[in-house]
Structures are given as C-alpha cells and as structure tokens.
Image (tube, rainbow, N blue to C red; front, side):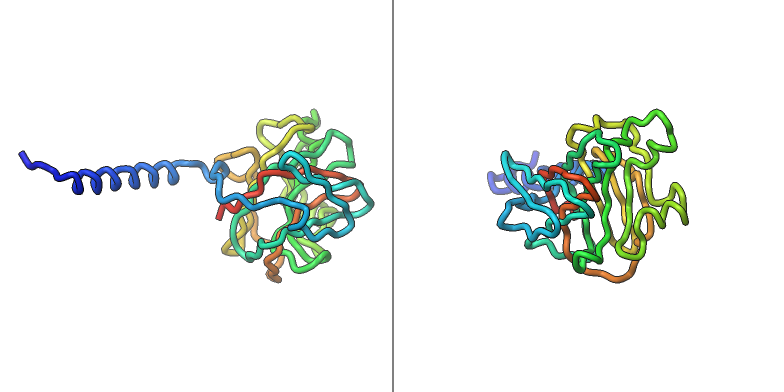
Length: 221
C-alpha cells in the first residue's frame, strides 16, 4: 500500500476542497449567487432629484415628483451583474423601486424595477405589471407597453408581500438583459437590450412620486 507524506496529504485535501467548492458554486442557481458586497453609504452616492438617509445598513430615498437616482461611486461596468434588496410599498401608483445600470447621465440609462402594489393583484393583467425593464429616454414604459404589451414587464411567480424586502438581480451582457426576483432559478425577464449606447454607471432608482429603500448591493458578475 502506498503511503502519503504529510505534504501529499495536505495537497490532496486542498484539491478535494477546491473541487467541492467549485461544484457548489456551479450548482447554485443564477438568481441565488451572492457576489461581492458593494458599500452603500451616503458619501458614496451622487443624488439627482432625491434626498437620502441611511440607517441600519440601508439607504432610503425620499418621495418627489419624477424619477430620482442615487449614482453609486466606484461602480462602472458596461457588462456585468448587480443584485440588491429593494423595498417599496402597497400604495397604488406610488411605489416604483429598482436599479439603473449602463448609465450615462440622469437622462440616459437602463433600469429594472418593481411595482410592489401589483405583486398580489387578483387581476392577472395587473399582476403582469409587477416587474419592468425600460431604457431611457427613448424606451419609457408607456411606449413599451403600447408597442409590445407583455414583453418588457412580467408577473413575479410566488408573489411577495408588497411591503417587504424583495431581492432583485440584473445581469446585462452580450446584448441581453436578464432579471431575477427573489432568487429565482430562471429569469422573469430575458430580453435584448433596448439600446446600444452604453455608459457604465449604476444607481439606486425610484419612479415618479415614489420613495424606496435599498440594502445589500452586490456585484454578482
């Protein structure tokens, strides 16, 4: 019988650990990968049309007319993956919360966001408006809904509580965008990007007359 030295045993053990770790990572559904944390702090945010407060690891943007953004310092990628938790409310027409990406400035960006007040709508046509992708300024949601109904928005499988935290992950690469909600194994939205113009900025985003809370931002690329 072949005997192993202590060094050989250590190398063998390390190899087994690396293989197990790799297998676990590969087995994790795309919408459940944690990724590297990105700090959310007031001194790392560049605000447009909102004020922000921070407490207990979360950032909150206030209510105001029109959309608001909080650009995140140090996040610059034209392709990649970002995930975070967002919290809106069950106020009809007053809760639109998500993340902007591929941003150039306050007028030019892509965004994926949720409408929590639609999560548990009994009317399937309204529930299908729970998750939205749009690209500003040329492809806002009213234009997309009129031109391609049911394509750029979607229901969310097991409807979450509209007043609770929701996990949102957005992958954007190779000309496509995928959006996953609450760790889904498959994307609720899987679409070609609406514009080829690319910036690399990312921002916390809230819509017209909406506030929103954000936490646990991560790079899941």
